[in-house]
Image 1: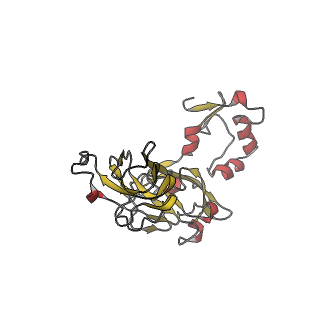
Image 2: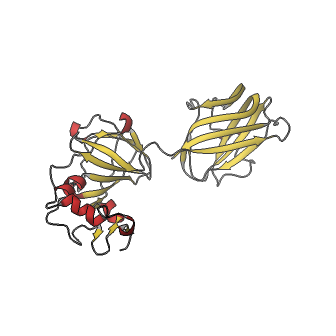
Image 3: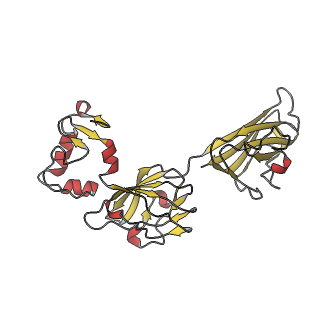
Length: 306
């Protein structure tokens, strides 16, 4: 079967797909209905479960993930918050392609009907913005999310969340997917003076491969030092080796220049006076060593996330 997974040979009797399905259904189908939230009648047979082939005893995992429903692309969400979301086609949807015109929150999705509506939905963010799933607030109680750790879950650009509706607690629960805290990366600039203290005026240039936002700057030195590093930003098209760009006028840190003071390290996640923490794909950063009293090696690390 295309996209199929052969499990018959490695599963003992009683754990093969055929045995599992028969065990779930027995003489009826209530087990399958309650497990998958898919209305079904009759005895299981080849073809009645789109993901199961009785001849080969194979499961088609793409069909399982699709949960036999439709893919809907609702009108883009607008504004900073959305409650009790009930896009057209929700009752038959397996996948919601969520678009939006700005960053914002989502506090709930219309709860499934008692019968006939799917209880597992893949929510995919197909926009250039981020939408945060809010834990147990604002929406009608039965439409809310119950999220791990009672914490909000950001759904950044390009990510997806697998949601399951729990009929006992009457809440949507996070079952998996790419949702959660956005994946973080580090952009590192390393100054090395060899065997000597690094002279001021040295610089390191780095090209940014993808759009991201700076959330933290950390400095690490091999010796206790007092040092400052300015950060200049320019576009790839404007970059000319520092003749006109990048230069001091391209600084993004404002008065809040990354600084170590009589220490081997510093860390700043406030970035209070920074003019811009958003980077575009192709941007070039120059890390300019403005002062240094003792460091022989010095690392400046920017924590970034999509």
